[in-house]
Length: 113
Length: 114
Picture 1 (tube, each protein chain N blue to C red):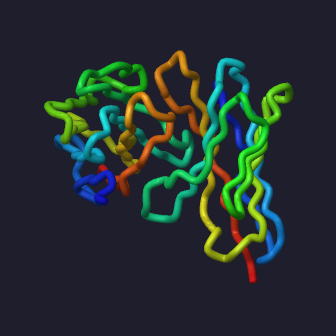
Picture 2: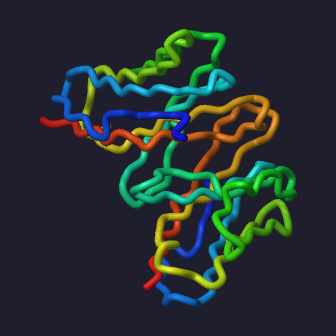
């Protein structure tokens, strides 16, 4: 049972445009959400997170939006740059499970010139 | 600052052999996690430790898998005997317990079992 879902395996966006990566979850106990970026042959790198008490968190070009009623979060990258090309993983945790992260299957973003 | 260190980066072995993967967490971090990444299942948590104690090993696929954390700066994941279906990338991550839930990952070990 996939509790965190990233339904788009890949996304292609032109440089300078907005990239929107989506993530849905089914477990209503999740209260902390993270996005990781992964380049080939490297480990996932933490990008940005959001607590369930917020609906938006911004860090430079990256913004995460959380819609708890829809159990949906999204990552916006504006403007997209070629260096953003990577696989993006959504992850969620439940305080009651002591920070055990559940990951989605990832979305491969390609930013084209 | 040194991040999470994993060794070896690549391992090729034959079916039936013992494989040992190693991890050094970030200094000061007291939670350590082992993950496996495959095309079919994505990133799966295998086991995690808090203060060197295994907390949840429900993700360990079989008895052929075992993990230890003898001290705060070292952990091993052992597969004995290895099988071709164990071929995957294995990641170690660490976290400072009591802070946010953010985990920091090592570069991974790519395991190929022939």
